[in-house]
Amino acid sequence: FQDFQLLYDRTVEKNLPRWATAYKFSALEVETTLYDITVQVGRTGVLTPVAELETVPVAGSMISRATLHNEDNIRIKDIRIGDRVIIRKAGDVIPEVARSLPDKRTGEEKIFEMPRNCPVCGAEVTRAEGESAVKCTNPLCEAQSLRRLQHFVSRDAMNIDGLGDSLIERLCASGLLEDIPGIYHLSDKKDILVSMDKLGEKSVANMLEAIENSKKNNLSDLLFALGIPLVGKSNAKILSKTFRSMDAITQTSYDRLISINEVGPKMAESIITFFSSDENMSLIGELRALGLNMNELSEENTDEGLIFSDMTLDRKSVV
Image (tube, rainbow, N blue to C red; front, side, top):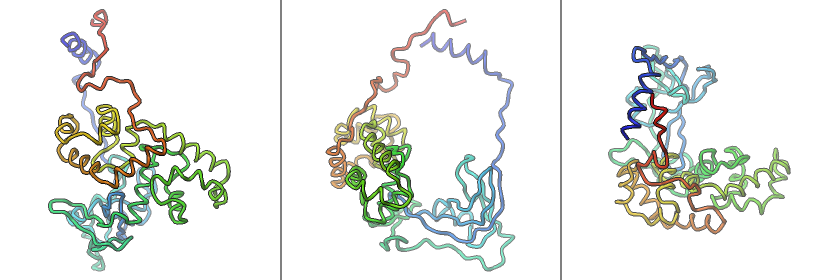
């Protein structure tokens, strides 16, 4: 360790000028009109308000919609329907409403109220004490099912090329796709798929091949695709490398989970709750029967903290 520290210190002294100061340009802000606020339902049932905007160019993109995050954010920023607002790209990527411009109000603006019922299925919505999220209480909500399917096939999850959001919407609307296991039964409906508008034999064949190939994906991809609350892509990789198999993860304990540096109490509770669900375990069983890989594929050392395992330091390079 001392040798490594010496190498690091000398590298820093040699390559990083201590006299330099880094500056970051502030995000480009643009004024526009917020003419409506709609509500989207996510895969976990969370209702998210979305600003419908007069289209304007922002940092190279034409922006007509922007997230408002939650009801509290709207209240804090005093954003109203009909307001003139300032928008920008958070992190230069995600469009957001930075603030409203109260001085430009005409008196016709309307205060937004979160709906008391899901805008898709009509079920009652709830907001847990101490949380900002408003959730649909219906686990069978069509919007949630659609978002779960779209998340499952997305690039960061199972990465099924050719099965995009719009196609999934069409398949669900036509009754050809109802749940995640149904993705792997689409090969039985090839003739119907080929006959659909804007789908040809070649594109369908490529999509079905991508679906079949996804069965070989790593365990981390499947863990993320399942949409376990609070478990992101990097967390899924950590769980996969730590436990090595789906069986080991489903049978683990809360204490074992929180012993992992990157897993906190809330995430541990979420993982335990997810795998305690008969519905989720049934889904995993179906996917296993369909031939999806349930194991970590890499041969990397999984001992936590051994980031320099099997590495050596060339003393001659320390100058």
